[in-house]
Length: 207
Image 1 (spheres, helix red, strand yellow):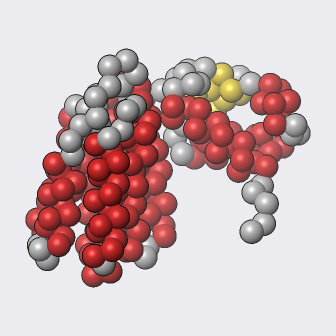
Image 2: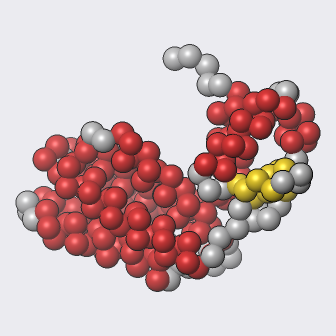
């Protein structure tokens, strides 16, 4: 594997900090400080900032540089609606390729979420479930869009669940798996759409 370009590594690390809330909405991204941290020139740092901007995680301000993007309830709802539509599309294309082994792994991911002791661990298990049932669609551009929306969803989730955390029992995930195993794709898609859209109605509730 070729080494990861420095701009990609900087962008990936900054994105993780923004999503987790370690860098707060509205906080300035200081080019000099970040260049010094990563031992980089300003060129890959600026490239990293542009990548964050393209993902909706940063905004550029004339003569002031970049700052971390905020988000509104309307954006939370928009992301939920987009995720629901795109994930249903991906699931319809993935369904013919979902083997019993894949569905078993998705069930394992759901159990891991049930056992999660913190919101970050739960979110990773949740994202793994969705990846497992959607990746077989074989549509890389669609999956890239869904991944970016999941990143936005994780950011909304982390902003609302920092203190008291109790792992939910994910009945929707189990209902989706039951429908897929039964060959009822329409039912699986309906539950998936409802499951994702609900996060836009109650942005503090994890999906």
